[in-house]
Length: 276
Image (cartoon, rainbow, N blue to C red; front, side, top):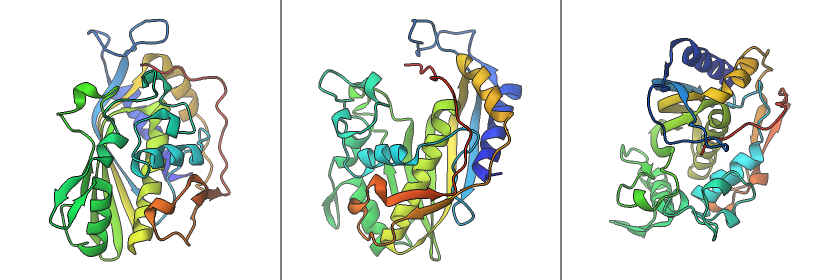
């Protein structure tokens, strides 16, 4: 059984057995038919994934690594906020007629700031620090800019990464304000595990621990039957993660730079409704 499956199953069991429902109040998200999308949630969930042991990908539900990496690179490498630069349709519901999601995600990462080393954006600053000043305890990328929130189609969910080098190991904390367990948990964990592997490789370190901190960890009301089905399944063993070792520049990675060997997973039939 993969570690990612164990953590996902336990999180879902805890939410369903100990969680708090928000059915007693008005909520912002709506289903496609206009009904309010209520959730049952836990506050302050912290999960740890040791990437030296295995790659955290779910097997109780098939995950699509290359699509996840495509979105990751859309944000962190292309620094785009336009869905026309993305090869999937995961952001279509939030884009305007021009394809823009406003001053969100990739927009925040392409804004340049002034540092002693010169003008650079947050990603380039993190790469510079990891290469030239790995002992720093200030290596962070943050997408939650209050000045721009009113011009974002969606406030950032996974909003910051804090990096820390211990010896020859690169670790990171992913902070997330909100996590839809069914649609996004496996996707986000997989993405940021890949990011940690990529950054470690191009800066000369080994990928270590990914710590995932979730403020509001929830399951939507219409997702409960699907989640119950998933957590009753028998997981497979974790696959082997492979990253193209010839890449030494973060901006040279593509979705084809990654693949999984020996990945087995259960299919998930039918379309999952998404609250917007």
